[in-house]
Image (cartoon, rainbow, N blue to C red):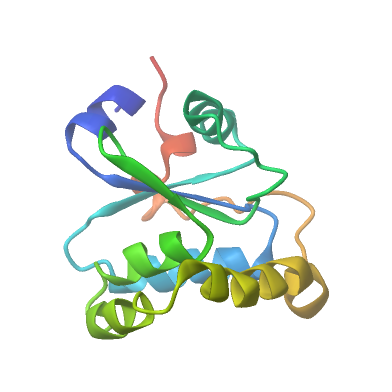
Length: 146
């Protein structure tokens, strides 16, 4: 399945820091709660992650932890991305809507604080996560590229 066919199926794409333990745990959290199979994933460090970021002109010096792409619609960064993701997870829709009432500038202060300290608090891997065979189809970097 190529990136084009993933986009045509209207999957939402989560780009994440593939060496961050917190980010990898968050990906597992989303996968376990993605009952409607809404999301696909790629590490920011991967070729496809870099391509998607460049196509949208996203500065990864400013946002290097999570990006949500809704192909053909929009992309979200930082706390906006996290809340948009939460809106699609069973049990987290309401809390995401409530937290979205807080101005993004305030939410991003907290988000940026956690993002700056994520390696210190949660650790860092030497290389990006390799998905299990059962989860490979959810990761764009695992799909054959055309």
